[in-house]
Length: 324
Image (cartoon, rainbow, N blue to C red):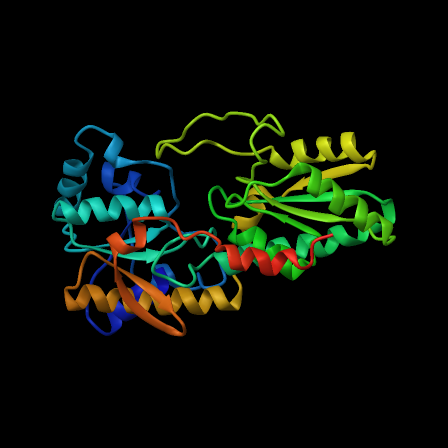
């Protein structure tokens, strides 16, 4: 994405660029790096970001917005391109409302931003999870164990849904639908009766029907989100206790965020970058570039961030056909 912005911005429009380091910490503290064509050469196959990221929330820091405005002016920045998910672009929306010229780009593995069919990073995370699930099938069947694969997804189960369907999971658990542990155990026992071992894909934010299991409470980050983790292990213990079958958990965690991006994500990120610099050049701010079908369009930052895009009931029902 950064490569596309710089290549077109410099080569076509004659703009100059600086990059702010580590998410909102960079503009808050005025830490920049040069971004010219030479700086973006060779980054297409690299995952993550060359600028770094952080969980800094300038809206929670006294005078944070004014500090950002001052640092942008001092660096000679006329417009800001913000790349990220709901939290990053939520801050971008607030900055735009207070006079900062901002264009947003949807980058999150969770695919939970409204106004766009896909975010870039999602396809890569799903493919990494599918590869892991494919490998788990072999060891699950050879050891006759129930294997649980915990993937990311705090409030939205898109990664679990897509990876579970593509990987042939026997149960998929997502945050949008509280699960019945008794039904999960029934699926596990049914799968064992076919002489195959069950694979369960669970999003980190999945939770049982109230009162069925005791979940751990985590601390909050700068954006007010609970730090999650552990649902897979708790699920394994419940399955062992209720079925007598061995259960093991694999937590993919940040493995999903690294490595080489898929071709789909490389193309999508490139197209987003080209359209983002067009929006800046056109003077159309307060928008996010978005994928609709096969077209890249501009959507309001408010539309993109007002609520999360979660898994619809119908999509989950499609997956349920294959449970057990």
